[in-house]
Image 1 (cartoon, rainbow, N blue to C red):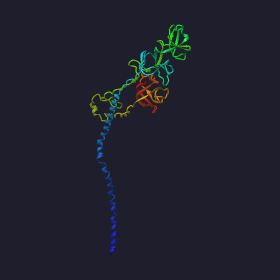
Image 2: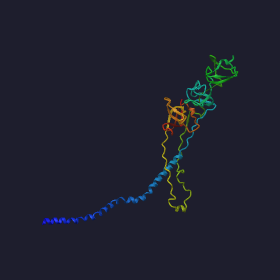
Image 3: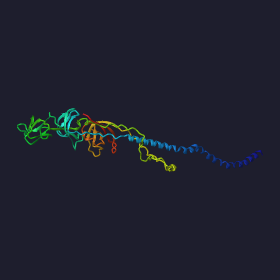
Image 4: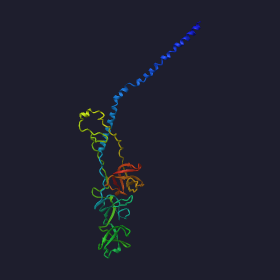
Length: 362
């Protein structure tokens, strides 16, 4: 009987436990709903208060950058122009050693004499070759041939008194008509003979005999020199004045009226200034030694280039923004050039140097 009663109690207790699950589900939904609450306290309420501060700092930084960029732009002064002084008729001095004196302008002329540094010459005029070679100077000085030099005249054109018989005769740099003409003589002018070679007679050079030498090897007075240079411009003092930039509202010239004061904030909002441009890298100033050579390629960035004196390989193309510097005067000359080196915009592997200073070497 005891066993039966225990079995009956266990059977009757089961229904009492079953209703419990009907009340339990209501509690779990409430617990998950309460869990997200800690993620929405103070930060959500403070965000509107601090939100205006961040854009304000960003605008201030942009204004400072724009003001700094404007001051730097205003501080840059245009550099003075490079100038090459042409030779004029009159005295000059040789500025290099062992300079060739030729019978005609250009490297095709025969070398008839040599002059060295410090020797005086008299310039007749400066001439320019239109189609000079890649390494040939285009500017040449026509000079009076020194009196101690000798020229040649055809023997049959002299009479028994060593005077010119025809109306006009040419003087040559050597004993033959293939040599360049270095002067003329008129009928009746007497000559001083030195030597005879075949049908030609060597005579003392008259005062009107002339020859040629590269113009860059001569200097006159204080202005003409073998060094052309640009002084480094001094930066202008910085000021607090900021020039008006595109996209920036102009400063008001009159105080706002009552209507402006009462206007909505949106109407008076100042547009954001344009973002400041990234500062360019500092210029690359270099100094190279080489020989100036002409370039006639239509793809070359300039007409002149600097080549190595040893390998004759290109170093830089030479560029100048001024029209007063004739780079043709330096063709074929050994120089040291200083300037800003960069890459050509069209061909990124082509170096170009903007000339600031040129020094001609002996």
